[in-house]
Amino acid sequence: MEQGRLFRERPCLHDCARRDDVLKNPPKPPVVIWAISDGRAGIEAQAVGLAEAVAREARTQGIEAAIEIKRVGWTGRIGRLPWWLNLLPRRWLTPESRINGPWPDLWIAAGRATLPLSIRAKRWSGGKTYVVQIQDPRVPPQMFDLVIPPKHDRLSGDNILPITGSPHRVTAARLASEYEVFKAQLDDLPRPRVAVLLGGKSKAFDLPVERAAQMAHQIQIPLEQDGGSLLMTFSRRTPEPARALLTARLRHLPGMVWDGEGPNPYFAFLAAADYILVTEDSTNMATEAASTGKPVFILKMEGSSLKFRLFHEELERQGAARPYGGAFHGWTYEPVDETGRAAREVLARMRGETVVEVEEAPEAEAVEPVAEPPVAPRPSRKPRSKTAAVAEKPAAKPKAAPATKPVAKKAGTKAKTTVTATATAAAKPKPRTKPKTQ
Image 1 (cartoon, rainbow, N blue to C red):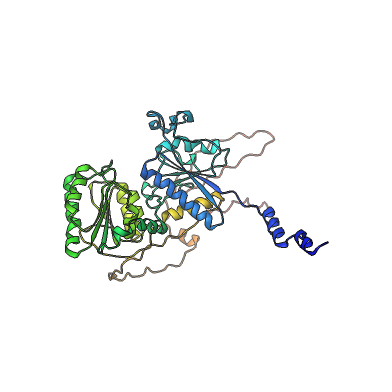
Image 2: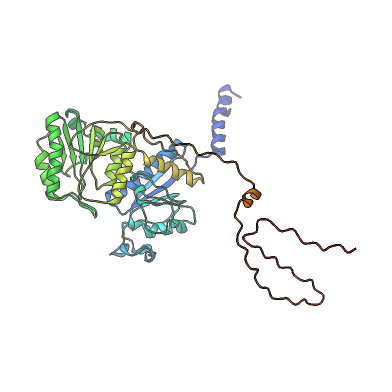
């Protein structure tokens, strides 16, 4: 046989070893994650943000993940029915809602419209799908595998994971990428760069023209006196009169004011800012701002809410945010990464584990102790025996023995003995003995 032919027919040991390794350890299929919402930007960002965080965490463990974004809606006003009437057939979903098998490994949902589906997702999948519901579902949490509400909703339970604020899509990589899109417009702006993220009307808050004028004055004065630039963006909820007034009052400052036209520079503003101002009506914007590690100031609006007050107090406790008082100043803190913590917990619970992370409280400012008068120690007493304690008790007045009815003794049975104990007895009396007969 020719040498060349022999060489061609000789099996390659490296290829065989690689083929055997593939047969013994075939690649695992990717974890399929559905991020489901009603399509509203703020709600969808929570579901997609958590799904992306789970996928990132899975890849660090050598597991690939595939995310599908789904938007659901119900025909008419069906989706507003009480939850116990919401076991509706899927044919009543809008045509854009694609909720059919094959079912995912992980179901992450946010928003009221998803509740009728999340409640039944595990049954539809035959127990395969792990169901996570974001926010307070206002239904029994046992209907889901895991509920992730904000801490200020004050929910607790074995399958409840409270987090500060809400899940989001902000990462260092995304901020750097978005900054590149607007680099030419942002690079030459003078510092400090102040990002102003404005919300608007909600159930608890409003932004009337009068309050918008005060807000514009508080932002304008320090930028004019100390220099810097403005990066301002509005929400869909910002009332038009407030939007017009803020734009007119602050347009002359160096910077950018996004009016809703063209690409949204929101993430680029977060990346470029030295300070971030957020109106108090938005959990999402405040949480996203706190994830950057930059100083966050809360802008006061008209209205109040206990839940939002608790939320802002939590951000202050973690060192991320402070109320805005009309001046900019810096400080440092550990970026708030509750989305990452929630993602690690989801993966651990899917494997039947539990992640325990100790949260370190920020260092408190040193307070000079107040001198207090010394307290004299109490004298120690030697324990006394029961007999001595009883002996020292004053003798109680004897009480008349209660009358007892004679009990007839049946033939062939032993008589029962009734012992009556009194509260004044100091010790058990000695049993009486019959005198011995001579």
